[in-house]
Length: 370
Image (cartoon, rainbow, N blue to C red; front, side, top):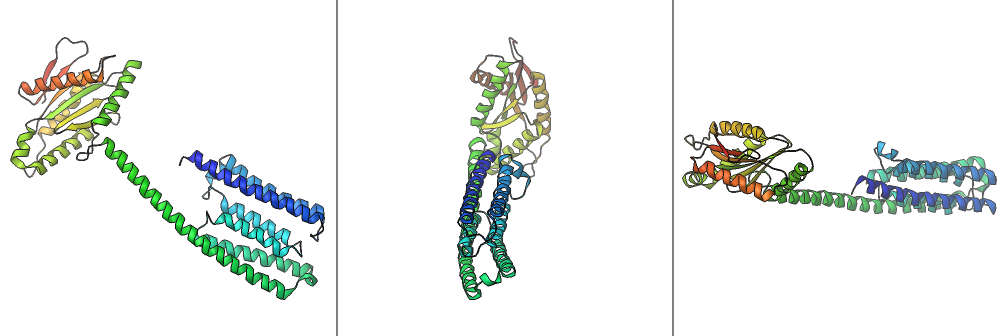
C-alpha cells in the first residue's frame, strides 16, 4: 500500500473517532441540560470542548502529514489516552450516570484492538482502571455521601472482567495481525522474486531477452527524441561447445557465471548486460559512441583472456563481438540483426575479434579483441 493510501486510511479512522468524541460531547451537554452533572452547564461545555478540540488537533496532525514524524504514525495511543483522560474528568462530575459512562471507556478500547500489541493493550487496560479509580477517589473526596461503596465495588469487579474479555480479544487480534503481516511480507517477497525471475537469467543473474528488448525500446525512444546515442554489443564466447564437451556442462555453467561477473564489473550503472541464450550476450551502452564501446570490449577481452579456472588451467578464454551504434529512426530489430551479422563476421575471420560499424559508414571495421 502506498504511503498516501495509508495516510488516507489513518485520516478516515481518526475522523471516525473524532465524530465519536463529538457525539460524546453533545451527549454530555444534553445530560448536563437535564441535570445529571453536579457541576455547571458552562463547566461541562468547557470540559467537553477541550476534549473534542484536543482530539481534533491530533486529527489535524494526520491531515498535514506531521504524524509521519512520530513512531506511532497513526497516533492511536495519544488519541485514546487523551479521550480517556477527559472521559474520566467528566465521569468525576456525575453520579447516576457514572456506570453508564464506562461504556465510553469500552468504545475507546475497541479502537485499540486494531493497533495495540498485547503488552500495549494490557498497559492501556491498567491505565483505564487507574483513571476510573481516580474518578471514584475524586467523588469520594468531594461527595462521599453519593458513593454506595458495595455497589461501586460490584461495578468495578464487573468492569474488570469486561476489560479482561477485551484483553483476550485484543490478544487474538494482535496474533491475527502479526500472522497477516508475516503473510504479507512473504507474499511481497514472493512477488518480488517472481518479478525478478521474469526479467533475469536464472543462471547468470544478468537480464534476459525480454528485459533487454524493453531497455532497447527505451533507449531508442531517447535517441529519437534528442541527440542521444547508444551502442549495442553482441558477444559470443568462442568455442564454448568444446568447453561443454570436454569439461562438462557444470563447468560450462561456471564459465558463463564468470563471464557474467566480468560484464557486471565492466559496465556502468546506466548500462545493461543481458544473456539472450546459450553463450550469447548483449550489452547496451547508454549515452555512448562506438569508440567508447570498443574500449570497453577490448578491456573485457584482455581480462577474459587472463581468466583461469582451477578445473581447466589450459583453457584459453576468448570471445567475439559485433558492435553497432544505433542510428536515429532505425528499428531495434535491424540494429540487433546488424550486430549479429558483425559478430558472425568476427567468428568467420578467426574469432577473438571485434567487428564494429560506425554510423553512416559504408562498410564495417574489424579489430582484434586484444
